[in-house]
Image (cartoon, rainbow, N blue to C red):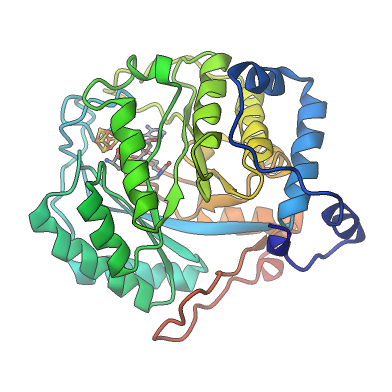
Length: 356
Ligand code: SAM
Ligand code: DTB
Ligand code: SF4
């Protein structure tokens, strides 16, 4: 695992990187996670930053771009989601996008400096008839030299295999919250269904992206429960998105009270400590976070973001403002980890230092 520590840019990084690496564990008890989250804030952040430096360059953040390839009219009842057909959110439903339209967006992502292209569909699960189109999207995106990621709902073992054979690098499927709170948020699929999809994704050899949402009215113990479930999977997800609820008018959670922002930072820090070698993604909800909050999230160990002015259906900060903040904080976008040589020239990377 130490091999993942990138070439360092400061002496502090080097000295901490040579310290004994925090153990990768899969046996967290709820009580332990609760205690981790409840520590004094400074102690929690110090521990998180220390662990972060053992596994990563603390001044690099991975950048992904998100595209909704099929929008709205979803039959599921996820209480946070603007795309559920059960809630009147004013969203216009759109059919599965054409392959060429998707690749046009992927080419724009290359130019903007993203290294991963994530495609999301408002499905309970993909229909067999849609698979050839989805497979062609994966192949096209990879041919541009981008890492590919999809989130299409529940997958059967065969569908996971098909996507893996097409070259899909990551599959995103979130556990969303603790097993106990889950039923308050979603009734149309079970926690066990989600765990099974993750098992199919892992079994097919793809990398797992799985995390959750905070600020849905859950308690601190529910945030502990979510992290415990993720960290006790047989293998940690390589990517752990921590979303802050985006309150969308028309959804049952539209009027949910604000979560203390420090609770969000605590969740990031605990994720970093419990899954030390995983990328922790500062995901939805960034529009409501100021620069100081972003900086705290990076200090707590977040090292990935969704980049570009839109998430799936809701707004996200402008790419330029992210890059300007990177430059002010001395953060660089992480380069792509190339496993297979792409057929086309590698992407142009943003020079953070040039955008100050
Ligand atoms: N339909 C697929 C599924 O649910 O598996 C894939 C797309 S779904 C929109 C992907 C994830 O986005 C959800 O699991 C949830 O964690 C997150 N999400 C959706 N709406 C959100 C919101 N309003 N605020 C924060 N996160 C949200
Ligand atoms: C994830 O954990 N967050 C992203 C991605 N995976 C697909 C989605 C956030 C969606 C926010 C609401 C919207 O834009 O529709
Ligand atoms: Fe559908 Fe996914 Fe939204 Fe749930 S989160 S309603 S499954 S699009």
